[in-house]
Image 1 (tube, helix red, strand yellow):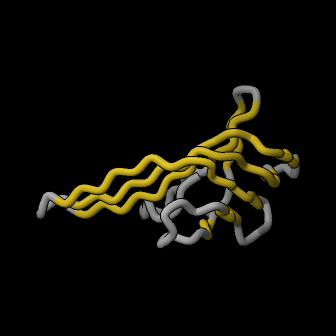
Image 2: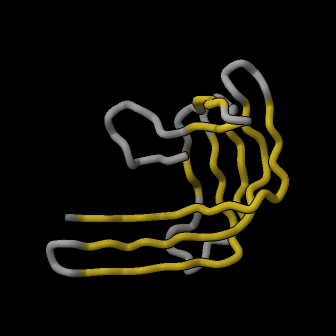
Image 3: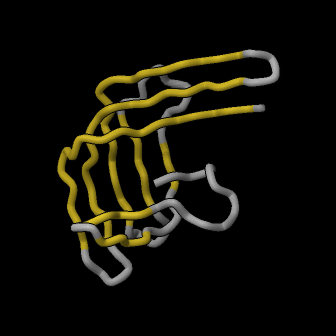
Length: 108
């Protein structure tokens, strides 16, 4: 899932189950951006089909300032808990599922 990356009107948000693709709605990410290591992220959709909590355990980061190119990248490993509901109403529960999140600001 992504937010603020592809501004063309298309979404990258997909759940794959047994080789089948299920489109997911637009999502929001809530976390403390100014914290060195956000301990808890909320990832959710306005319609309630996505409601996840991500608890980070560790962070890999890189910050570049090359004048014409700037990048502030942080990638977190941790676990997801919550639910995802497909368009046809099937609900998938996650309980401490290992995964990654990332926060990336780039300017060029």
